[in-house]
Image 1 (tube, helix red, strand yellow):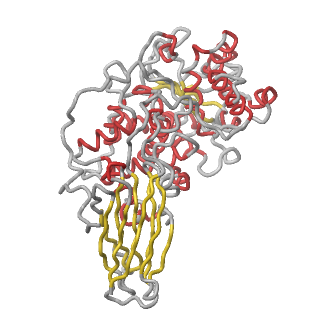
Image 2 (cartoon, rainbow, N blue to C red; image 1 turned 30 degrees about the vertical axis):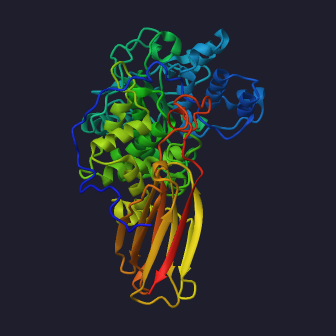
Image 3 (spheres, helix red, strand yellow; image 1 turned 180 degrees about the horizontal axis):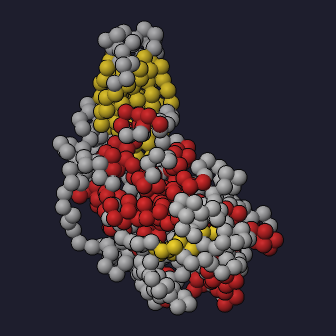
Length: 555
């Protein structure tokens, strides 16, 4: 084993460099529709697994269950309620399967996807049952609402007294705040024009946001599309399309836990509008990347609200053993911390780094159409580093977030996999752990009885071959609060080691961070269908890799 040197080997691995390289369009047209959004196993998932229904029918019934769960349960049995955060991608799944539905099913789907202003044309969704009031149109979009029925917001009109309910004025102002950050300041592509949406298109072509009582269905809000180009049978070969959005009419505390009221409207608008922005790049991108970046940008627009902290238990800070690119369950929201790391660990701390990734994921006519991890890898390379170094540093940051993230004092640290107390009598330990791709494990060593004040500790790792993604770091935490970060150089055999200070009374602990930074695949993209468990529906090559660790007291 060898002693540590910086893993990157570069003086400034995050220095920005001009973008180079040509577009990679090999996957365009061949990319299939993404897997349906996961829901805890219920009657619908069992029906799909047993072949009683096909995937298009599943997508339709899951979308119906958003708005009429009772009807779906009456037909299938114990159908679960979808998570309120899932509506956008559940509806996306339906849109991309419209051409696989029968004629009666297609009529049902069109009704679900209809806008609230389609009224009775939206009987299974959230259609208005009374004529809408005059829309409130600002520079970049229009807010739609009604003044009666359960869909109406509070009609108080005091600030300003302009004949428009205060809630609608607030929704319009919030929308423009979101636009200012996401489009104007961060430079994201605005949502596509909906001029071709049925029945006659949208005359002003700007995005429409509808206020409705979707909280009664357990939903915060959602964005979807009625763009004719979105359906696979349209003849349009790409994955960019327009969108419209719906948000709740009051975010009442009785309907929503945690953040509610106007703060809930703020973060919901920031999150859902970013989905509309994503649709202008690639509406069929990996679920983990779509949801994590939309959750990240909530805190960029409204830094003081911090609603996305609720996802820490399902994040790499709470579950470092779950692969970053897993599309399953709810870790996709907690993965927002990865985008925060990308920004804060770069030299310029420039949030437009995430926009650079989306520009490489762009699946329109002229877009490179790289899938999520390849787009991130390319941006990191342009910044002068390697993906594996960056991901190893991510694991190290998550060990001591309070010392590294700007708001890290409020973040949990990644939980240790094992904790060992090193003593004079028990002066050495060894063990092993199995790591999947894009995960980390944390082994803590604490000085105990008989450890001298000038003691040192040798820490080593004997992992799988370096080419499989093996990386390692050591973090030294001093009693004084000082932290030392020590990326290790891993040789071709996957071995690394270092000697660090370990004096009792001076050192609180020494943490070994073992990381599997592999993004290699054992199958081509679009082969793990219909499950699409990981990025680009490929199966990882370097899972279940065994990492041996050891530590020995030196005094």
